[in-house]
Image 1 (cartoon, rainbow, N blue to C red):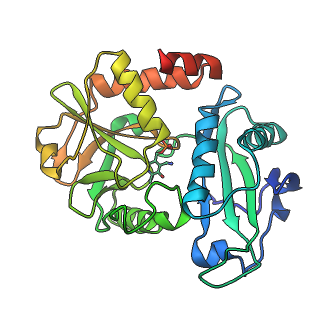
Image 2: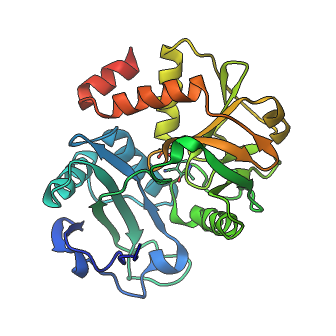
Image 3: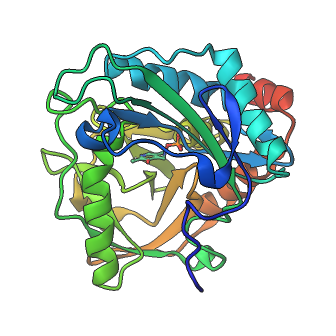
Amino acid sequence: MALVPFDDRDGWIWQDGAFVPWREARIHVLTHGLHYASSVFEGERAYAGHVFRLREHTERLIQSGRILGFEIPWTADEIDEACRQTLARNGLTEGYVRPVAWRGTEQLSVAAPQSRIHLAVAAWPWPNLYGGDRMKGLRLTWARWKRPHPETAPTASKAAGLYMIGTLAKHEASAEGYDDALMLDWQGNISEGTGANVFLVIEGALHTPTPVNFLDGITRRTVMALARKRQIEVVERTIPPSDLARTSEVFLAGTAAEITPVREVGEHRFTPGVVTETLLRDYEALVRMPPEEVASRLAA
Ligand code: PMP
C-alpha cells in the first residue's frame, strides 16, 4: 500500500485556536519542540461519534505539559471542544485524534521559558494499530532498550522525547520480523510495549506491572475496571520476565492498540484465551457507549 504522507492530505487541522487547511498546518524549522523535544501529545480514539474518555486524555495532556514545565494556554473544556470539532470538521465519527502541544520559536537553546506554547489537534481514520488479524496474536521480541528510572526521565508525561527508545525498539523488532517489542525497565522487570501497556494472565488472575516508570494508560485503567466487574482478580506488581514461563495469556492495551492478544514474547508462547477474549469484547462494547454511560459503568 502506498504511504500517503501526513502533510499531504485533505482535511482540517485545529492549530492555536483556528482551523487551517490540512496542508497549511506548518511550523518553523527552528521550533524548540523539534530540537529539544519540548512536546507532549495525546492519542485518542473516537467510536460512534464520541472520543472515548476524552476528559481523561485532555487532563493527561495538560498534566504532561506541566511535568515538562509549561502550561497549555487552553482550558480542559476548550481542548475537549477542539477535539470534538476536529472530528466533526473532518467528517469523522470513528478515528484517531492527536492533540499535540509544544514550545515555539521564541528561544532556541536548552532553556526556553519564554517560549510560546502551541497546541494543535488533528484527526484521521486509523483502524487497529496491528491490523485486522490481530486475534492471531502478536509476535513480540525483547527490546534492547530499557524504560528509564522515573528519576532519569519524566516518565509520567506523554512526552515526545520518551518515544525515542520506543521508535528504536519497534524499528529493531520490525527489522527482525516481529510485530513489536516488549520493554523491560532499568531493573530488568517487565515494563510495557512501545505504545501500549501489557497484561499477563496467570492462573486466571490478571497481572500487570505497577506504573512507576511508564504511562498509567487510560486503556490500562479501563481494562482493570472491566476485569474487576467480571470478578477477575487484578494484581499490580513488579513482574520479572521469568513469570512468563507460568503465564497462559498475554495482551497489550492502549488507545491505538486497543486490546491486542500476544502469542509470543521471546522464547515464550501463549494462546489468546477466555480472559483476553472476555475483556476484549467488554472493551469493544464499552467504547461504543455514550460518555455518560461509560462513566457510570466504570464508576459502579
Ligand atoms: N504506553 C505507551 C508508551 C503508550 O504510547 C501508550 C499509548 N498512549 C500507552 C502506554 C497506553 O496509554 P493509553 O491507554 O492511555 O492510550
